[in-house]
Image (cartoon, rainbow, N blue to C red; front, side, top):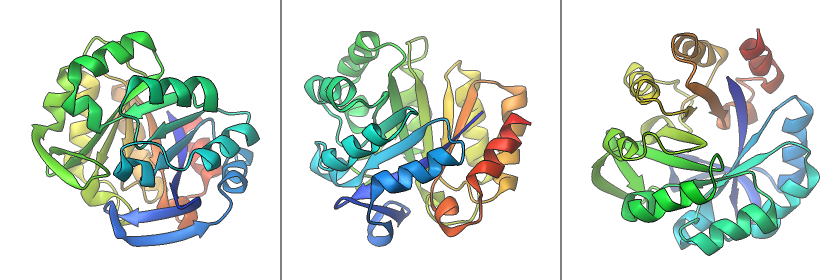
Length: 246
């Protein structure tokens, strides 16, 4: 199971939000590439990047910062936020150099387009499954749909997805751990045959241990994204990686 440090970008800076609320922002660094190198030096196998401005605008905004991160690293980076058409995805994969594109809003609103995109880029497209009370949230988590996260994921079973990145928004950035219901949802997704990356609420090594328990039963749980916890020091990246490798 991989540990993926998160870098959330807003206005060219590294920030974290609480529960996806743009009014509850903490700035953790002004040099995203330097921050990326810090996590890579601690053994991170991959970074998880989010263009928060892009998620609201519907198109990538922090392209310069993303390009600087990718150029500075020898490890792959996945990116979500504002990737809503084929040309944009192609640009970020082939020109900017990200390894995986994470699609959330457009997967819900244009499922047939998303299915075609997965097939066009097998193993390089991830479904961003962001849920509030079990329902999919879109547009930088500003809108909540009437589609359940599980139902949306079900549509893409059997497709060559890189991953389903499942986030319970209620947990994200709150430093309160992952609740049992969210762990259960992740295992359900794994049991559907989908590769799952856990996101939101990974606060201490005990949360990583809880995910590893699922991983041992169900190896389709392939990763955990850690955000605020590594910036506030409740998880050490190298320790988390060592726990997973052990």
